Length: 96
Image (cartoon, rainbow, N blue to C red; front, side):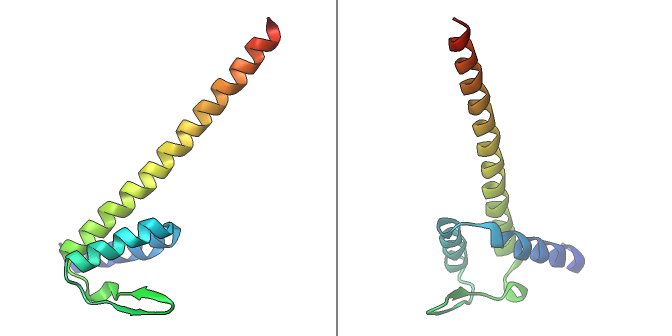
């Protein structure tokens, strides 16, 4: 992978990791720990340097973030569908 592509991936991860919830952050940490990447921990949280993370780890993190974002998007679509069905059912009941 080219240096520019790796930098784009790091930027993508940096921008999207902010939207994760605590349980998803924990999974990112599991990936970091499993891949034996360096990190530091203090009372403010767990920190790692994206510029030193291996390509394999970057790919795993990106894959997980993509999964989280896709799942969230699918949930929103499902909720809209359920709301449409609920409204339809209420309208149908009123018409009876």
